[in-house]
Structure formats: C-alpha cells, structure tokens
Picture (spheres, rainbow, N blue to C red):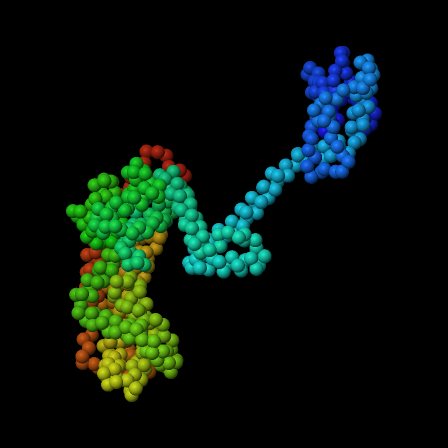
Length: 543
C-alpha cells in the first residue's frame, strides 16, 4: 500500500497531485524518489502491507503499490505513460486503502506504544512514591512497622492509589533502610567534598538480645552550616577489647564513605566515656587511635565526668547513701506492685494531689533523671504519707508488711528527711540544668566552661543561702507540718550535712573539670572580609 503526501511539488489543481517528469522515461518509483540538485523532494512516501487494527472488509492492498512497481498502461509513448500514471495516482489517492495508510502513518507519529509505556511507568512510580512516603512517616514518627499495612489500607479507602506491592512490614523495613542509607550517603558525600573537620563520638550500648554493641556518632558541618551530630551506625561488637572496638570504629567509618586519606586530614577529635578500655594510657582505644592519627584530639565526655563527680560525692557523704536507699525502696514499692500503685492513686485523690511515676535516684541514669524522681516525691509528699499510714493500719496485710509501712511513714514524717529532700531537690535541679546544657548540640567548650563555673558558684552559695526548696523545708520544720503531714523527729535518721555534701560535690567537680584557659589573638596575613577583624582563638585544657 502506498501513501503519498503532498509537499513542495507543483500543484495545478486543488486536491490533485501532479508529477512533472524530466527528460527520459522513468517509472513511478523513480518519480517519487527523484530529488533535484539543491532542492529536497517534496513527496513523503510510506508503504505498508498490513493495516493492523484498521483492517476493513473489501479493502485490499495492491502488491504493486506496496513494492513501488506500478507500470503504465498502453504504449510506450511518454505522454501516454504519464497520463496513465496520473490516472493511477488519482485513483489511489481517493481510495480507502490510501486513507488507511495515511491514518497508520499519522498514528505512527503519535508513538502510541511509547505513550502507553510512559503512562504505566508514571503510574507505577506514583504508587511506589506513596508507599515510600508511608514507610518514611513510620520511621520519622517512631511508629512500629506493623502499622505499615494498616496505613496503606486507610489511604486506599481514602481514594489513594497505593498499588499492590510493598505492603508488608518487611517491605517497610527494607524501604526505611534504603532511605536511611541514601540519606547517609548524601550527607557523607557533602562532608567529604567540603573537607569538613569532624569529631567522632562513641558509646557502649546493649542490644535487644543483650549483646554488647557500640553506637557511633559524627559531628561535622554539612553544606557549610553549623556542625551537628550524625548517627553513623549501631555495631554489634565481636570483642570488647580495645583492638576490637578500634577495628569496628574504622570499619564503620570506611563503609560510610570516609577514606583513610580523608580521615588523616580531617578527623580532629575522638570522644568517649572514661572507661579504661576507651581512655587507658597504654592500650586504650584513644591511645591506639592517636598512634595512627597523630593530630587526633581525644576527649572525655563532659556529662560522664559530671556523673562521676556526683557519684564520688555520694560515696564520700554516707548520709546521702541512706537517702538513696530510701528512695530506692519507694521506687521498688510501686514499680513492682500494681496493688500498691493503685492504692497510691487512691491516696492521692484523698489529699487532692497528683502522682507521677517514681524512678531511681543517683543510679546509672543521668542526673536529670534523678532530679525528676526527687521532684515527684516532693510533689507527692502528702499522697505517699497517706498511703503509708493507710497500709500500716490495713488489717488485710500481715504484721510484717504493716510494720514496714509504719517505718516508712515515720521516716516521711521526720523533719530531717524533709530537709534532705529539699536539699537534694535544689542540688539536683542545678545539676540537671547543667547536664541538659552540656548535652545540647550547640554547646562549645567555652560555653561549657561558663556553665560549669556558674553551677559551681550556685552550689557554693547554697552553703550560706539555702535554695528555694531547702528554705521551704526549714519553714515547715519550724511550723511542725508540711501541708497536711505532721512532722516529728526521727532518731534513727541521720540527716545529710548540707555543707559537707555541697563542698564534696564542688571539690569533685573542680577535680573533674580543672580548667586553664588561655586566650590570644593571631594576626592574619590576608585581608579579612568587611566586618571581620583578626581571628581570636581560645585553647581550653582540661586535666
């Protein structure tokens, strides 16, 4: 089948195509393909034998038109041959077969198959995008991966096309891991390309299966912004010795995308707790790393130093240990018995107060956690005393339990315990603020030095001017009651010597954070930008 479209050939009549031949006798195919020098042929030819979906009854395709073998009828006279060709072209132009060929040619330009493939691909990508966003939401909001299927079902009911794949919680886990890996790769590439100076912080942790693991963090500038912490990995340790920890750290950095050459130039500090395996002078992780990276600056975490200072002060003042043991009893009493917890809520309703969860005090948790527990006991003082009195008179309990609660009530009603509680409230409040300030991402060495010195000054002032809660406890002691609780002396209780405890705490903090600060100005050889003068540097040395 032959489809002929009109172009730049001469047209003597509308809707009729004429072929102007030159000298000599030519076949029709030669006329159709002829090109004059410097002038493009104005006829576009397309030939096909199959009409595909456009096939119609009684519409046939001539083999001569398909193969360009049209011959003239009659004699070999040139004029007669041309007239014959014109008649055949005119007849073919108005035929249904020619119209079908034109339709096929036009549809070929539309790229129907390509459009269908692109439409299907765009639909599949849109479905995948929706599933990926759902999985990312779960990770962002700390939701369990088991919510993945339910969220997808909810979106489908709301009319969102979520496809049929990647709907299980296993798919959600794999998607989040893929997203996290791509995000980390992008951030690491930015750090590496900008040659940002970096610090690595590690800490030991315990996995769900109670196996020893190590958490790796890096602090660096991303795209020239303020340095911030980046979680690298949580690695299960095959060995808890210094060599095993060092190997796990270096493997983590290399797998993240930091080469050995880059680390030599840009790794400036290493931060850990004060465990001997980390900071041991002979074979600790820090010692092994400084031998490999001579310019590396090792650092003992300031929050860990604070915890050690508080722990040493507690060990030096025996009365603080007694306070700690009593608070531990209260914690165990309500954390291990639903009955006691329910009765405490009932007692709180009787006295019109509110009870929150009571945690441990001065344990392995940060100081801020100890402060929250002391704060709860202070606010729930009346409710705790009421529950102790009710339990001491409860005849459904055996005599041993009643005697235990009677002893707890006597201690709660003692003037000495209230003063101890007020003292610990004030002290732990200041230490909690310091701990949170040292944990802030924006903290620097100079800011930390300022916070430390301020806290030490406040603690020293407590020796002469008691804090807010200590003052309230002293007033209640003079009045003989604290709220609805009558206060009395308790000979078995050894109160905390406030000045001794405060001085011990100050001494241990000064020992842990012994500061020597030297500030100096260095003139630079290059011309600084407007508004920038000579650069000032502060070197802080902690012993």
